[in-house]
Image 1 (cartoon, rainbow over the protein chains, first blue to last red):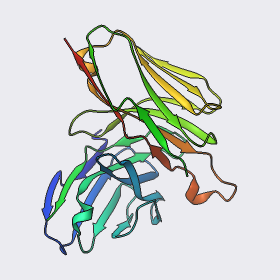
Image 2: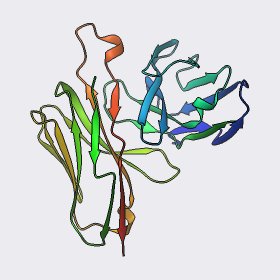
Image 3: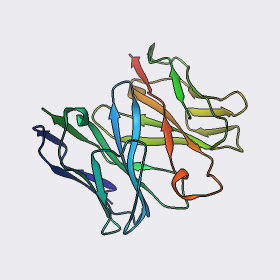
Image 4: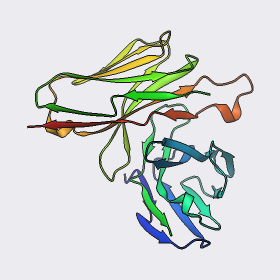
Amino acid sequence: NAGVTQTPKFRVLKTGQSMTLLCAQDMNHEYMYWYRQDPGMGLRLIHYSVGEGTTAKGEVPDGYNVSRLKKQNFLLGLESAAPSQTSVYFCASRVWAKEKLFFGSGTQLSVL
Amino acid sequence: KQEVTQIPAALSVPEGENLVLNCSFTDSAIYNLQWFRQDPGKGLTSLLLIQSSQREQTSGRLNASLDKSSGRSTLYIAASQPGDSATYLCAVRRTPSNAGGTSYGKLTFGQGTILTVHP
């Protein structure tokens, strides 16, 4: 099992560019999450999904969109990147009946 | 709004020492509390999970306690080793609302304690 895999691991964008972060899990988990981690702010939830075809907003959703077309994949999109979106992004997943979260290794994004 | 605070922000100890990391939260209506470990450049690894009805959980040299009434949790690490060096984060999950749906599953994270265990 690869667990939770995030691609890419690093990316540098210019303001206004767009990109998609991919999260893939091979554990057949129903729930998937996107977090961002900033110094002094802890992890904050961006969007989450409780199943294929469903998504919901977290606490900091502005400027991001997500899609869950397949159960194993959860995509995070930035349509027009801003410097405030410079952060480390983590994907996580879990089984609906279990509390334990499994995290990917993160994507470090810099927006210049 | 739930707020989670971890003290100290950083801790440096010699190998072999027993240590305690602290986590406090402002809203006692929690479903559970988790402790995570994060190594540099890596994601988070779940260490221990305490349900709201439990007082403590143990795994090897780690022991986590929960006192809901006072809004506190501690992570005790016995006989620390250099390999324990990492950032430790606690996170609380809110009790699901009667309406269900969006409130369930949301974790509120603390900012973490950076632990360094030197030989």
